[in-house]
Image 1 (tube, rainbow, N blue to C red):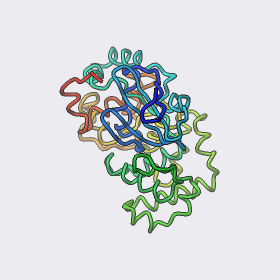
Image 2: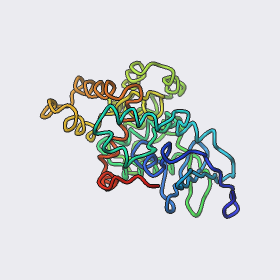
Image 3: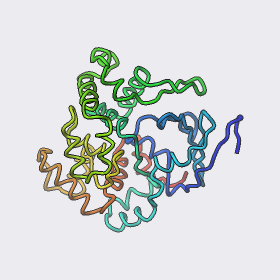
Length: 307
């Protein structure tokens, strides 16, 4: 299929298996922008990719004209059928069954670990729109240019070596605040260990990967679990942020109301979700998390299910 001289390819995936409008904008990745109705553009690796959602499929194109189906199938983890998991989680949990119709096709992405780590170092005490702006600034300042599409310039995510030589004052001027120091320190630590140290955590058990990530500057339990879930193939990881902490107290563990989110309580919340939802608990948690976001609240109220 060709549009405006560019090849548009079908991903051959139905909406119940992938919905871009929720998957790309719910705070697990920060490189995608809405560029037209039901159309998003972002960067995966060195590719500028446009995605368009229809009632029956997702179509994609690249600035270079390349067919990147294998890349997208890996990124969206399409080897894992989602609809059976939704049915399993809905049977196991009444709250999930209540919100799931508003979020069909919400998948967990498989981001590059370096991009994921530094994106979530920007997330501390922050919201999705501001994190997105910070990641954009990081890419513009330190990333490799990938070209221009419809008047907008796109950049590869910066390498660890590029971030390691960044000056804290530069990042501070870009609006990173106290996170400027953490970004530089984490990058320098990764340079010392070798970048493959981070990628090797994909092959480590969840508990070991989580523990190792905690040794990086600026990485606490929540950021470690975000990196585990969204880039290191650990679908049981449960990032407990403010929203998830509220969900846990309100819907599942009322005995925790009034308690502080200590390390022990953090673990208790994660273990509860893992016991309730199983091996892909992190994926189920992502749907419950999205239902708490102001941007998606109307979907829950309306029970929106159409594409």
